[in-house]
Length: 173
Picture 1 (cartoon, helix red, strand yellow):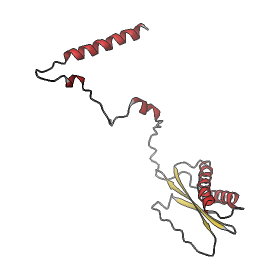
Picture 2 (cartoon, rainbow, N blue to C red):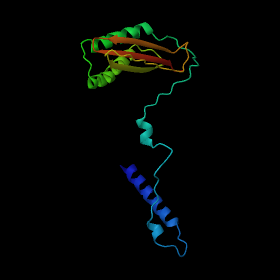
Picture 3 (tube, helix red, strand yellow):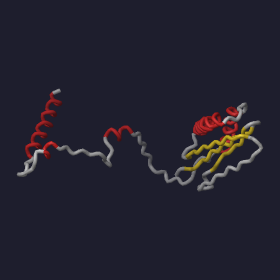
Picture 4 (cartoon, rainbow, N blue to C red):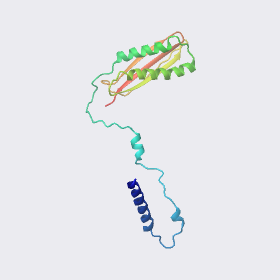
């Protein structure tokens, strides 16, 4: 308690000495005494910002390729199971399908992440459309390393709709 009181006194003394050391040149108006400078932007984060971020510093491994390759067959099985479970008895409805694409993609991403495949970034896309005697072409183009990056894909069909799910696995060096 005494330390806190002493530190408050010291802060007050420093404040008073700073105020007394400012000498006003002659002819300067009283407005400058009252004006306060503020900083609206700072490039350096505050102490609270630094502690609120959980940063993990990892040393370089100098590893240029994956130690464990992406299990395409296992992910294809996950895609088949999820699409079948969610859409087996479903009828095409635009609003229902819009919600289901979000739900299914999140479920697929969660199940693939449970495989704990190190150093791969995952991109999951799901398309659902109506089957009504028409055709559709869905294409994708990616720039990647064919030795480490890959894709898993599965197409599901029932009487009223089709669904295509893709999981792109991109190795992160």
